[in-house]
Length: 127
Image 1: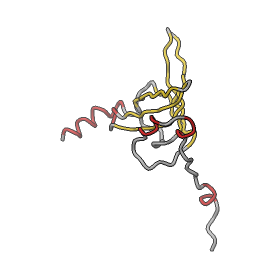
Image 2 (image 1 turned 90 degrees about the vertical axis):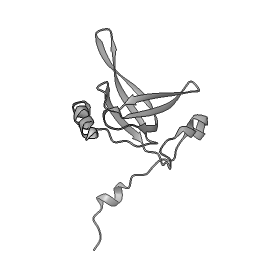
Image 3 (image 1 turned 180 degrees about the horizontal axis):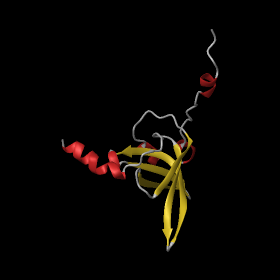
Image 4 (image 1 turned 135 degrees about the horizontal axis):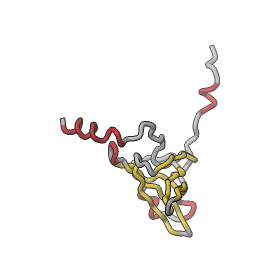
């Protein structure tokens, strides 16, 4: 009963088209930034290392390296400040949280790329 009420209250704040990305994907997060009375879009690029929460409170964490330092930022998935999330590359992972990347430096941070099998889907089956 109480979960139904919570879903009813959250419904107007949840985005209808949720961006499709997974843990280990390299993404560009387009965020709206207000500077005075002007609004611009700033892009934060990095690897998704965590997703947590449900409903309107769902969050995801993106990590990148800037000037040799690791920078992590948490974004609310359903925020009106998030313009869009573009997936640049998909990584092969076997964990739900990639916190182990915090201890890695340089090339060790890279994840193997997941290959999309587009050729098999486009070719008709032989009979």
